[in-house]
Length: 360
Image (cartoon, rainbow, N blue to C red; front, side, top):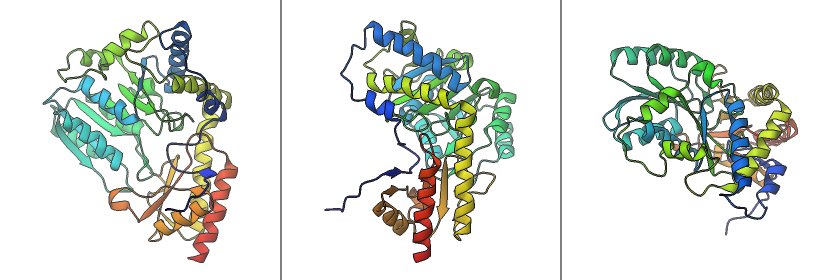
């Protein structure tokens, strides 16, 4: 039997540490998901989410993981045979492309080396060479490699080419700058277990008018993820199918906590943690997977041949770090600084990491 360790400092890039107030709400008695309390809750949460998304677009809440939200975005706007450009800088970018392929998209993929961001100029060149591409898929923040994309620049390219722009913002929204309307993002998808400080189980999706117009012409088969049905239900403060009532209640509380901190302060907290980690791990003689320019403010990926050993020894200290995916397995470890955390927890990680690296 594997030895158990009590984790007191969860430093993975999701699921993240829970807000105490949200955790308490998860233990409440069940309530009627078709009653007036839930209707009021849905309207309240949706209104608050528009502030976090920086949008006037429609916001939908589905009971699903972030991957469910990505699939919902695809099946509502991409018909079999549609030409789609998928830009991947890691495992989650690959997943987005796989979803599109599974639903019959005629896929062009730009895949970048682990640890590097997408090149906007190459995206623009690819769109110019393939004028029939109708949709661009991209991950804003790739947690598998600790890299962020220059979404602001890429959004201008998408707008110039008049294509549908769909963004995986699962790990970036509520932690990184992402003004949906200003950047002209047609669909943005996020998840409850990342920057929102509540358990997994919800995906939130913003839809522009262009996205809705496209959804009415799409020929993909869908039922549970039919967003037009979800929109009709939301007009009455409801969901078409049984919702995760407790998660939505906890999300409402989590949003209040985020507003109390202030959106600008929230973003600064993530950046400050990342800058501190970058500086100190370099002083320890460790190397980052990503460049300073491309590195993510919510998760830091660090290269070492001792990744597995470091993760094991940190776990024995009550600190849970993340390993690498795919070809990065055993070659990197990742420190998550996303959602609900304070600098004391970051300091503890760096203190114990310093001890371990010295011993190695």
